[in-house]
Amino acid sequence: MFAKLALGLGLIFSSVSCALAGDELPESDTVYLFSSFRNDGETGLHLAWSEDGLDWHDINEGASVLPPLVGGRLMRDPCIILGGDGRYHLVWTTGWWEDNIAIAHSDDLITWSEQTELPVMRGTVGVMNSWAPEIFYDEEDGEYLIFWSSAVPGRFPETDDRGDIRSTTGKSINHRVYYTKKKDFETYSPTALFYDGGFVSIDANILRDGERYIMFLKDETKRPEPEKNVRIAIAADPEGPWGPASPPISPDEVWVEGPTSVKIGEQFYVYYDAYMEHRMMGLRSPDLIHWEDISDKLSFPEGSRHGTVLPIDRETLERLLTAHDG
Image (cartoon, rainbow, N blue to C red; front, side):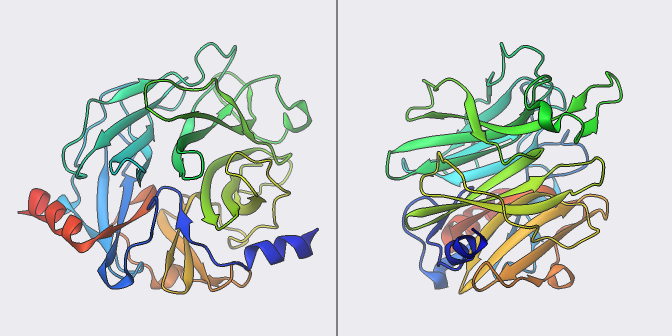
């Protein structure tokens, strides 16, 4: 089984989720945009940019470029893609214990549409939260997939004693990844289970590799021994079914969350929020099998938390810098 996993991971990727939809930009014209939040997410969307994926620079002098206005009035875990319609689409977590996520759209990454609350888990009895949504454009079907993690008491009893405990209720936070899909951002399919690897899981992120799709996600197991690491699963279709999860790829003894991935040159980069260390950390690999810890080579703006990477062209970056930095 792991031989098949290694074969799948050794293939070369052609596109990313929470990144570019469609053909890749010419390498010489590509720079990278990192969308993230600060503190608890109360200030909204923060942006940074990089030429090499290592040195990241604040946009708007580190101030928010978009305040949160819906749901729980937070903007955590922001994910931006360039969709098949040529527009940018942003989704985010609106609060700690909400039954919704949020979405907004832009033609230029500067002016954003009205923020819309998506009640993706409303009506689900006992649902505790809706965390870390990401959006992925399925070029084959022309549909957008939005996926996130929620804990619903009573589901997946085999791992009910493995997650964190919510202190205010004493209930186990037993996450799995759910999703909805749409073509027009008006009509959404019913919420359904997206990924169940047999463990408490959050923060899914997808890379496309030709005919295969790779999911990076966090093993959120807390008990009896904590995992809190990044693992990988493979599918032939972005809606699954997903194969077994790999062993952890993130460093031992470091609790991480929010993996996001991008290909730069011949290397694949995975960044994650080492939230107990109060810093961004990362890995890179030429084949998704052999990983180099690049955490000491990274320079993110202070306070950057759980975000996603979007390849953009230099003209788009210059417009952003002009709009926000003068």
